[in-house]
Length: 466
Image 1: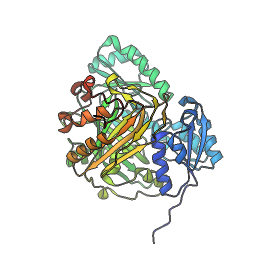
Image 2 (image 1 turned 60 degrees about the horizontal axis):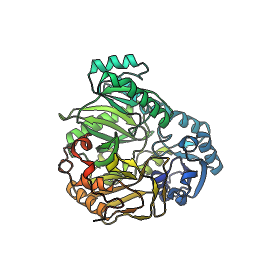
Image 3 (image 1 turned 180 degrees about the vertical axis):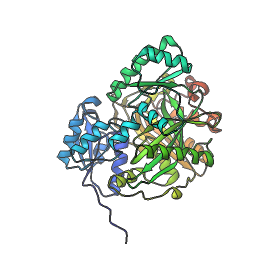
Image 4 (image 1 turned 90 degrees about the vertical axis):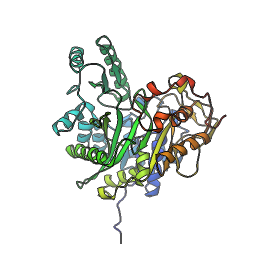
């Protein structure tokens, strides 16, 4: 007879939109009541309607709502929630928030604060990986606070160099400098953007590697010493260093390279006694050499493609690990089946440099059929607020191989109807039809080198328009 698993009384999701809805769904399968929080701008969001309870935590600006720690902890106490799932973004990689949860005897569903400090902070992560003898991208060994030191290091490494926010991700606080004269101004901009997005202005710089693939390894670890890698994802299709399309597995990674990268990812996690779901990110160059870039100490937007090719519910595993359970699988149990592609559906105009297009969705008809999954909080009548990230959903497809996955993506995009706001659906259609994408040889500069956004079909409202 199977051992009964203990449960949390309630789980509060300290996030919004589709990721909040994603966690709510797994909570329901585990028969754990869910608690949503929302800003005044998100009052009509689907995650508010689907949760067992919901509490308003402040006005639209994220600093006054989703980043408002006292409001979040108050909501948890009022709801009698004994666990918080952070989703991604916002406070998901904030060690101080984790410690405050612990002080209030609320379980943070994620890693311990020390692991977040060492790996969630990108500069500290690189230092940790150097100590663990992991190959890292050349760059500053710590946070850069002095422009003169940055200029000297950039001269030594050679341009171009990339500036990154130490405390965050998602492309925020990231800039590429090609010359001495532009570096100080770009660093100032990066600091301002990082402070606004993460409440931390620390930055670092590293050598910019030309035409790499952005390949990341999903890992999962428990409190019993088990760490498993679950295959890789190719996240090279990006705009402004923010991912638009992710797929698993990577077309350019064979089993030998997968194993090699996976072992490094496990080594990275063990170096900081990591617990929970995490992602170790690498840049893979043309010669098959890979360099540690950073570790995301949380669930990723693109976790869905790993779920599709492994059959494992990562959110469920996160919750069980947080309860002290051992992983429900071992490395030998992980088998990559088929191919999955995720396309972020953003309310943006790709013909105008992906300018956000908030507004009211007047018609929402997502695709269906074999191998199609939609993760979204949108619906007809939903108002896309201008205050947050412009992603309104994710279209994920699975096929027996990459060719079938692309064919299903084309079919699903054609079926996807969204009226009222512009979306990136025409962009995704163009990518799926692009020869460089189809043969898998694309790199992180794909959009700049292989796409002419001005020539996209002006479908304006939805993918099915002809």
